[in-house]
Each structure stands twice: as C-alpha cells, then as structure tokens.
Image (tube, rainbow, N blue to C red; front, side):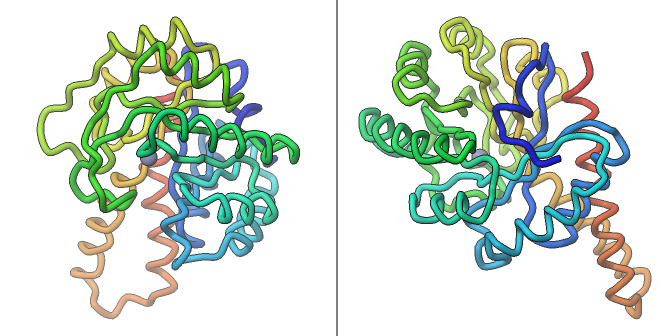
Length: 278
Ligand SMILES: [Zn+2]
C-alpha cells in the first residue's frame, strides 16, 4: 500500500528504510521487484530534476499500478524540490511525501518556507522532509550541478528547525556526498549523535551510494531512519547493460528493458536488506 513518509518511518528500531530514485518505468519496476523479493518497505523517490523524463501524473499512475499486491508498504516521495509550485503539483498528483530543500537558503528563510510546505502538505495527509546543512557534491551525481560545498548540520539549529517547522523528517549533513566519493569519506558520527539527542523526528541520510557498510550501520545505530540511494543504482545498471550489449549488439530492446529492471532491483534489494538488518 502507498503510505506517507511518517507512517513508513514509524516504529523503526535501529533500522532504516531505503529511498531509491526512479525516473522511468524500468526503475519503478526495479524498486517494486526488490520490495516483492525482500518483503520489506521502500520509498519510491522521484527527483524534481527528472521532470524531463516523466510527469508527476505519469509517475503516480505507474506507481499505483506497480505497487498493487506488494507484500510491504511503499511511499511515493518527491525528492529535493526548491520550487513550491512543483510541490503543490505533486500534492495534487497524489504523492504521499515531499521534500522541500531550502538548504542553500539562510536559516530563517529555510524555516519559513519549510513550515509553509509542512502546513500545505499536512492538510492533505502528506509528509514533509526538509534539509538543514548542505551535502557536498561527489562524482557522477545527478542530484544537482551546483556544489554548495559541505556545511555540517548544527545540532542546536536542527532542534530549533524541527520544532518550529513541524516537518516530519530532517535531512542532515554529516559528511556523505551526493554521487560517489572522490576520496575516503569522513562521516561525522559524533555530529549525528548530537543531533539525535536533540531532535526527535526521523533523520535522513542523503548520499548512501558508495558509503561503507559499517558507516551505514553506525548511522542507523545513531538515529538515521531514511537513506537515499541514487548514483550507485545507475552506475551498476549502466555498466552491466554495457557488457550485455557488447556481447550481443542485436539484442532486442524489450529484453534490455527487462534486464534493466532486474539490475536495478539487485542494487535496491542489497540496500533494503542492509538497512533492515540489526
Ligand atoms: Zn539528496
């Protein structure tokens, strides 16, 4: 069933739910296959940057059809959106969760806009994720082309932000990057621990791709409940498809689209399982 973000993240004890970016039928199908195989929930996440690939309404229609009969809940989430008109359109299209990203704005402006989005979304039973601090840009990321550099989330500001905005989940910046790491990652568990002590809403980790498993475990241990994965799904699937095509240049496209979904589901399944382990 499609539920909102608050519901899918509730009652998690030292576990997290993966949020996987989709932008085509094949990627939606891949995430749903992984839910089917694992019997565990997942968040189907559509970035506002993929509006050239699919419209909001098309995403909602395909997701509605794809989640039928799945053994676990899913949420349909709008990822990283700075534009409140697009957020409104996602609410109207039937998304169950939206992320307002005001992380590049001054604190007060981010608070004001996040609160307004929370009021608008909550009126429809939709959950809201906001972001405080800025997540650096790694290699091969498709999330953004601007690198605002890294600014770790300040724990006291995070507590104030969560209280006054009323958002349902908060993305924090603790050293992960969007895309693949250019160097050895420096994940600041100490900062996460401080934020966790002061903030009661679920915390979100962006930049799951390529993050060492033991660091992911430590993040979950210390309050992360939603983890976003995008780049690794694309990298793995494209590499494997390139090998398949190199082996058979005459392969039919209909076979390739099935293989694409299967390859996406392999990466998603790995992460769903990892995040749900204790
Ligand atoms: Zn992100």
